[in-house]
Length: 260
Image 1 (cartoon, helix red, strand yellow):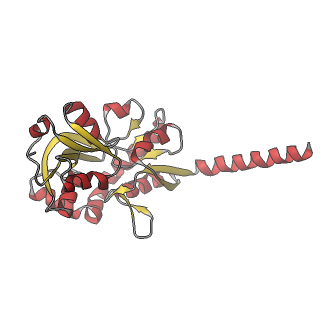
Image 2 (cartoon, rainbow, N blue to C red; image 1 turned 90 degrees about the horizontal axis):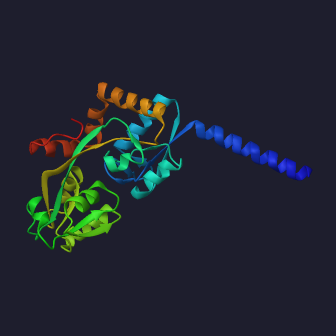
Image 3 (tube, rainbow, N blue to C red; image 1 turned 90 degrees about the vertical axis):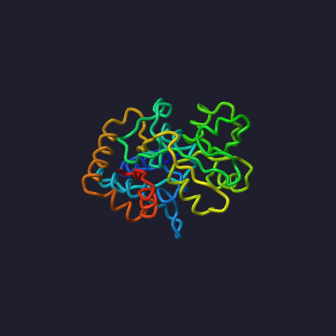
């Protein structure tokens, strides 16, 4: 019995210490496959715009920040079950997701657009409605949600990575891929011979930090951080560091930049 009692005491101490340490750490979930917002550097460490935002939130809260890299479709379940405290992963705030989680004030405004295969006849959003269209969509993204809602007659090829979607477009096995504007520009620049970037907006979106429902104090601190970063010009500096090329490309085409 003494051994059992001692064991229980040790376990209780471990749990207590674990609980204390967890309170001092802000765990942020992201899918680090989306440069320049969230990706791994040459040392395998997560970095990018989203990490910079997360670090600033950590400063506001007086907490160390831990980043947990996971698949995009696993982020909301992880937030709901308490495995992570926040999602900062180029997450579009919309009504469907808002049924499950809360959102901070937005920090990015972007649009969905089209990465078309070079030989596809798709030239505009209207062309996506042509019967028999075959489109790539990335699972759990707003591009997939938009296609399912707006293009019921299209054949959708649902894939779980950007690379897989781009490959389908490059090979001409799909007509196009609906995704965010910055990514469409970047992937077209990488594969100019195989793709066309159709940047006219299909749907306007904003990105926000995902927060578990009921965490009003945390939400207020996140919003305070975003407001401070805007006031201090931090997003302009992040654009210089991570998005200078994309900013110049968008301005050259008369398109509003994501932080404007």
